[in-house]
Amino acid sequence: MRTDPSHLDREHHPDAITARLEAERRHSYLGDAVLGGIDGCVTTFAVVAGALGAGFPRLVVVILGFANLIADGFSMAAGNFLGTKSQREEVEKTRATEERHVEEVPDGEREEVRQIFARKGFSGDVLERVVDVITGDRRLWIDTMLTEEHGLQVQGPSPFRAGLATFLAFLLVGLVPLAPFIVPGIAPGRMFTVSALATALAFVAVGIGKGMVLRRPLARSGIETLLIGGGAAALAYLVGSWLRALYGA
Image 1 (cartoon, rainbow, N blue to C red):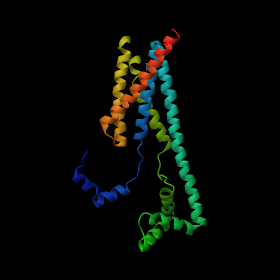
Image 2 (cartoon, rainbow, N blue to C red):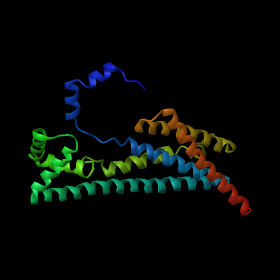
Image 3 (cartoon, rainbow, N blue to C red):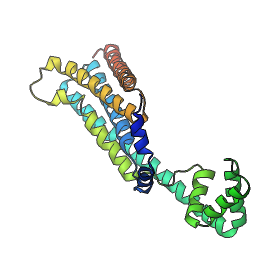
Image 4 (cartoon, rainbow, N blue to C red):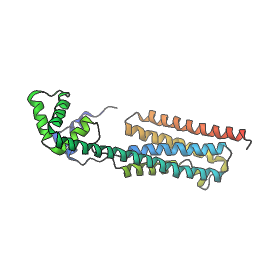
């Protein structure tokens, strides 16, 4: 996709660059929501398809679907919360270590900064000025070691918000396959068909959302998610049908 050259020029005007760099940096939780929505839609529809393949009545389908929706959604959100929290704890632990090193062996830490920027192509007086500027600000010094030496993200996402975004998206999108079984006015014989069509649209929608987050082709991302989700649902339905035939239910 081509970008308007005039738009790029405006974005790279000195005033625009200054405003962008001085603006408060906020982490986007759209990626957490998209992944939560994809997983919610896939797993819930797989449960619905498996239960129907096994010949379970409507009430059992709804119970199993909601049980999966709440339990699996909470599990995924908790996993995201703990993973994000662990990343933040790693940053804080490494920060404390670097602060101690700067305090106890400042010359060694200065040499680390020197070698890091020497590898980037700086040399001579320019390199020494870079080292002096960075090591002249203790906070900047520590942050530089975290990002350049350890490859850590200094300003990470909030574990609570990451988990909440995952859980809410899981619930909202995961409700789509269940909606035809709880909304009045849909004939029993058509519930699964409506559920499948609604779920297919949801797969495409969250796939497009994923493509937007990852900056991938939207159509390809939507079709890919549809195929993966549809494959999971088909497999669950076949397993349910096979077990029903096996045990003569």
